[in-house]
Length: 236
Image (cartoon, rainbow, N blue to C red):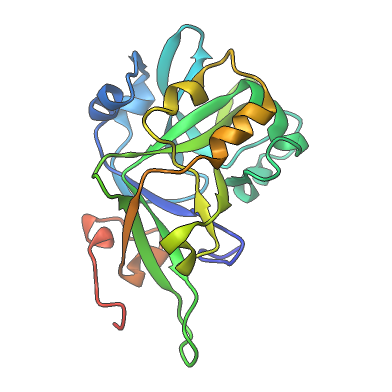
């Protein structure tokens, strides 16, 4: 499925804040070596290693770890399935066999400085326009995520999405669920295992976002510089 496909949402994001800065913001107690050494990226893509934060990775300790983006269910025989599972729909996450277990027991947040979404072209034009989204207050996003440990050796994750609301719907009909600061602790609490309550958290209002058009250079994974998040004229 190509980047910007109408059914793929949050297929690229930026994560360039330092691990120590994120740890302070999200009250992380342990940063693993891979998470601390992960390089900044302005074009994080599916199947790449990404930072995740969870309270259930190490019982009693909020830990920042690296997981491969694209959840691989524990029962999967082929890890290639993960490339098709970078997003989980909030509307069905409590029902789907691949996600209902992780929803109850293996929740995480995936920190991001911003993310990209592609708007369909107007009549007479062929190319979609990428937009960069970030929190209006400048804080990092806390994507609601799930993780899975495949064959006891490969940690993988997915980002939960839902129907877009407000101005975001003018760009794309889906949006990533990014949690309010006051909701992060509840989402990560391993003692909370009631699907209905967790689904209610996913339906709460998210922190306000601002967005602007950016260069189509972001379409290619090989392009990875701060210039990718710079605003451009949408008519370019």
